[in-house]
Image 1: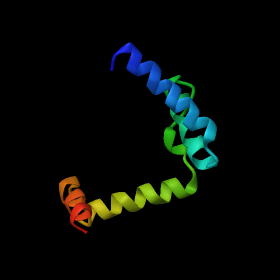
Image 2: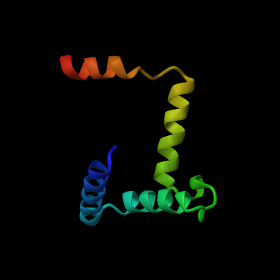
Image 3: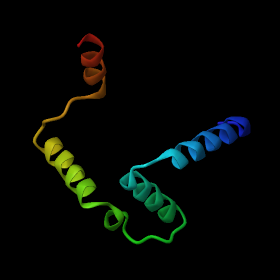
Length: 80
């Protein structure tokens, strides 16, 4: 990404963040920020209970073979 693209992306992200109404997304973004600054403990501790449940559910699905590759997913969407 060149400097002009980077500047444009940052501007778009700032606008998007300012328009957010979902506290869970704001919390997640804040966790990413704190983690990148080295000010956060374990990122898992920063997640909401709902986020943790969803992640664990995804891991369980993966372990049980209840997943599909992205090519099959996108083909199914295009042909659905």
